[in-house]
Length: 264
Ligand code: PGA
Image (tube, rainbow, N blue to C red; front, side, top):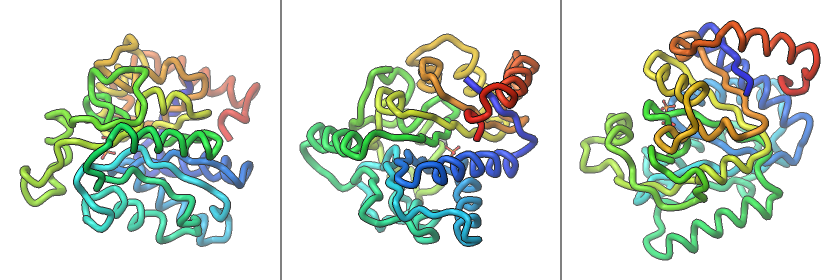
């Protein structure tokens, strides 16, 4: 794993955008795995700026979002469909037909729907580059603690901590969805490359457990230790509890010299 520690959130966003833009430029038909939440907002802003400057073309790209709340339609302001449109898709030239986000309005045959989502990822050639945030409880997507490390896209009950972290966006707690449809950890591990972004002291414990802790379903992000091409891009606050920072810096220096393509 590569651990890139940046000064603050702005630098994390710029570095992530540089890597995503590099990947899109080197493969125009790229399949991106996209995330929502406050963390990737800066990345999306940077990508939009690059697109507006004429430096980034998404016209042949495809995307699959990680998750969506169950029970929210695409027009609901707290839905992840709405989030993606507002914060990214309406500002860039992504072909609408190539955008995939789990449908939060399904009300039956959940397993069959989720299997179709998995099949459409496969049909697109698999995810080339997956963007992730991380929850305070170590979740990626909505793979809450104790999610199977082999899980695929499915319906998932949200944990108490996730409800607490996200309910501020809803008028009251009763409106906060209790479940979501999320790609599984197995789905995420199948992607060719993963970028996990984290910022702030509230993420420090989860980041340390993901990178330096044992692989455990109690911290879904720890499963990334089994992936061959993961880069954590985190700020100083999120790196606070890591014990091997000097080594990560050394690894990065060597990577720049010997395998710079891993950082491009
Ligand atoms: P955040 O959420 O980016 O809003 O902190 C991350 C997550 O829960 O995966």
